[in-house]
Length: 183
Image 1 (tube, rainbow, N blue to C red):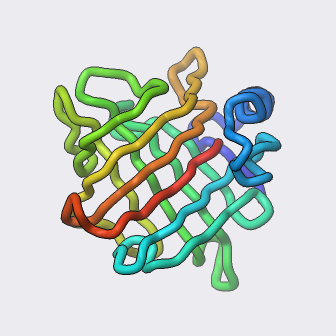
Image 2 (image 1 turned 120 degrees about the horizontal axis):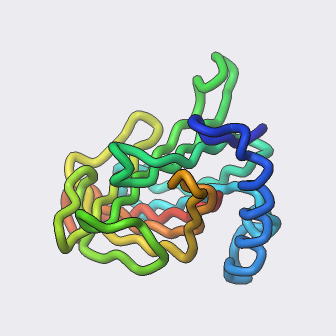
């Protein structure tokens, strides 16, 4: 499998070097092995009753999936995609998309973002968050996310992301979907 950014695949070599350097020095020891070596990865756990993950847990690596990291919606968010090919075609299998948006007027940076609301719905004080996957998404998303590290190239395109997400569908007390994103 491979990973690319849709807008600038020619910058892939630099992104790989940056990710390899950044993730090996910034990830906690408990991170999945593929993340610790600098390869993109996505893991999630879902509590019983969570609509998004249906109570399951999964881990995707470059051995099983393709990854895309890009600016989204007029550069107001970063979108992280996981595309896992299956039997029916190039992307007839798993698809996860996570949208992270800082409060309005800000640029996404390392930090903890609380009281996130459905993206696009960021306000001057609240960030935006959305998780879609396997044909499911929340009517309204509530949650928080932590960006441990993020990098952008000279053109403003994201080249590296290390983040965790906690999302809840339709209620702040709903069962949690927790994910780790590495690119």
